[in-house]
Length: 412
Ligand SMILES: [Zn+2]
Image 1 (cartoon, rainbow, N blue to C red):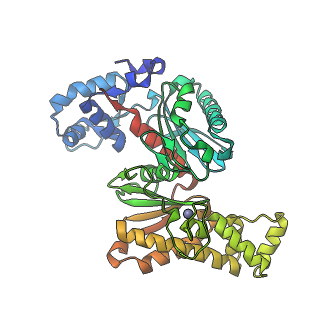
Image 2: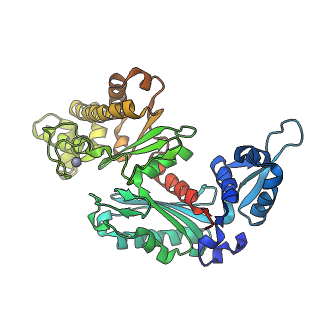
Image 3: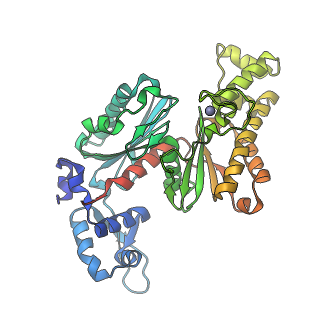
């Protein structure tokens, strides 16, 4: 076992951050709670203080855990609390969207220290896009005066179906050139001491909301991302639920209109094809051609014929009738599918995020109204339907926490 101050020069992170099952149990309990006293840990892990004492001593001397001050006294001397040593190394969260990269660098407690974002089209291909990610990570590390060998955990979210165990994208509609590309291996060429996890973008957003946003303290909720497509991240019994193959929550291709238009997946009337960003913009263009909105006609002219869901949202906020109808219709379609999911899964909350969630409260109101009027009474009594608290930051927060969850591993 190497000492913490040597971790940066360990040949692989596995040597430095692998522990026996009881040590790992202590580390994960502390990590999940932020900080715990030695007595708390003894109670949670159901081991005597005496048997855990050598483990505490070892983890503190290795610099994995650190004493972070005093807790509340139960009558006697206030207990010393143990937390993860934030300066153990760095963790990065990388949120790759269809048209953007958002990257954050955090300490080992998950607190974000540096951040950057840039426009990037995933269709340029994995090699080129990941080389931009790597360059940005070097920049963020150098702002902290740190080299690449101090980055020990990287979490990456991508907008497509991911086989979690391998981190490979399988038949991703938005990014076909990424099919089967070894993202982890490509990143490991530059960050060979880092532990790397890759997951679907909406799973990491759900994780972010659970750890840092409106989902704190909730064990069962859904995070809905509405953007170019529609996806659902599921937190079940406190964990991300991925299903058998990693694609649980792919709700964008649930059929809402058997006679509807043909989606890019080849089926008719898929939820995302009739209600997400592109559909909202397309309905507005059609409405303008039919002379239904002067506001949007002016907007199209000002933007050389290009209209986005954001324009429709702004028109709705300005009171435009066509825009309001379009936004409400999307909300009803999405709410109808979510009502079925609420009956099926009985979550405590649904948080709505993604680019299209910025188009105003009409969308949320329509989604909420449809869910409450269509789902069963018991499943909706305590149900919260809200916009994500973290908004565009949900992805990087979730990627960091997912990376930190997986960085400490069991010795073989
Ligand atoms: Zn489809």
